[in-house]
Length: 170
Image 1 (cartoon, rainbow, N blue to C red):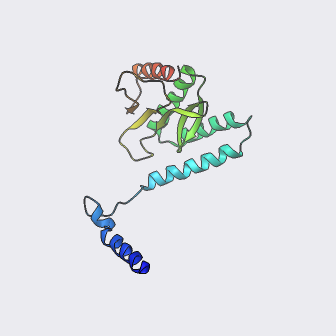
Image 2 (spheres, one colour):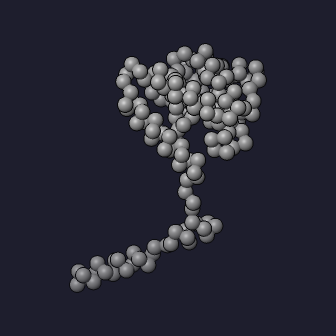
Image 3 (cartoon, one colour):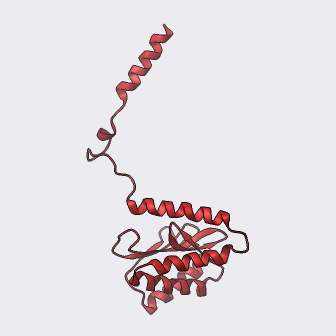
């Protein structure tokens, strides 16, 4: 008798399952991560392995070298912005440590990423992005910006970013 009950429950459970195809809105199966997203995740795994191998004294110098290498790999317009942002961040918030984060230049305080630069080329976007994580001290009321689209950097933009970075680490 208990065998029939078990079979009945199993049969009932099978009857209520939906196929993956019918569960989607469009009727097509989800494609998952893009090639660019998978590459970024692989880069992050490599970054974590490299961090684990480094000694405590070499960590900061090696991390900055990694950031500068990532910046050097970028196409010219993004590379120029990333180089400028690197200088602005180092001048505005010397307490932030450069490091890579998902293959992007990022800047951390006490091991936590505060801000980052994402090249337009990295995810085939029409603009680069300068963003802040939830560790940034930018809270202002109930709504505040945490990422900015960048096509180029003007002197006014650079000044604004410097102020935001200083506030983010305050």
